[in-house]
Length: 309
Length: 309
Image (cartoon, rainbow over all chains, first blue to last red; front, side, top):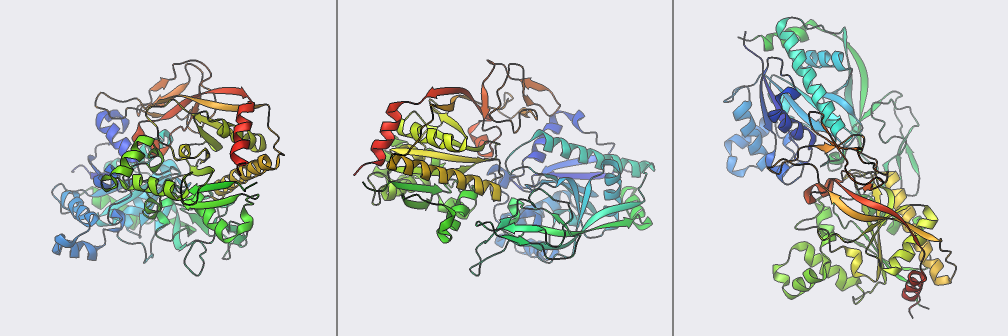
């Protein structure tokens, strides 16, 4: 039985500085994280953007892994944005068909929103859901299922057979905080332990996966000119994961006028006031909290992936 | 008696987005702030940097007002960084000898550090100290006296006869928060009221100004290579303005080793973990809390400035 080959990516966004610090420290102090028998490759996602302290140079690297864009870029590299070239480079090096192929990827992110320590999974790939269930069972963290969002596509982890995002916040862009680093470390450690347990046959799955399924994203109110007309209401700020009721305050104008949430009770907001989503016209996203019974399809898919020979 | 001419600058740093929002809203909703009879000019400090969401393009605009740099730049504009040109432009438009001269400037900033709502004064100019004393008396906020710091020079407000920085945090770069906007509004309102009171002769000065005088800045611990070796300790994070005692935890390494503060009891940390100061190798600054009796020199200097005819 071969060892699972895991790619750990830090700094996919160049102004998210906590995971890169963790990974650099881990390179020097190997006792920081126990890889639990995995063969680990670590890589800085976007070193050029990191060098200048920006999320990206030309385009968001974590929206650049759309198959159609990758194909176009491979055909015409001379016309490519720098992030498209970087996406091709990462796949060429560590992709499933790359020089040093990896089976599974963990992409480490931080957010200015009060998301705590959580996982993001993209779509409903069985192996992702199995791994997320194990990590949730181990740490009790929230899982955000991002799917069916035409405006946001092309995430890095989607190009590997299995992949999770670890998302930790709140922390400003460009600020390293020990607590954020520690939470990232804990979650990454839990991923390695889950993988090792699957490989050894000791994995103890929970009965269900509790996830927050993406419903839609909500923009700030805007004037006819397109200018922002109100901000996140103070009673909503920092209340990620807490259900909204119809009539709850959502936004507030500079003069103090409140704009209320008008939708079904129980929608759960995430990524409230994430700095990087302003340019994407996302003030928050709404999700539906769901309990999905664990499926044998999930556990089998993950076991099959990790027990390849 | 002429009306006081006040310049209000927002967005001197292009990724500090709360004051620009406030100023734009004020332009549309004039009841937001009462200028109390002042003739107010508002301006975006660094609109080019703001357009791309960065602190600056070529160099920190708020370190570009050094007289020697300004003189060089005026002599050789063709060799200038964009921020040096912008500094000359702002002075040409609103400086004491500019087209629309202003007597007094308020420069609005935000910080990722937990500084609350506070004022920064640069040096010991009597009129600045008088104005700070009135605003402190009105709102109870902290005042940081920045002086004797050879590494940090050339602040915008220094080029006007009187000027204060309003500094509000914590807020991530690129994030607008209603509470931060409101605190900025309150402080700016208090400045206008203080000016109006001086002009009308109704100013009621406190007996003293409590200020935090800059002692020195402290960098993160570094390896011989220059790489950062530890982060701000969680017990120090967000504890701006709270006195340090010898032996208090200051930094922590990735492995959990604590580095303690070794200095005199009572030094007071400010700007702990400000994102933008990482490139300046400043993890925090230390100050001395001092109570300065109000001086007649101060109040006379401010009255003289504001009662010019």
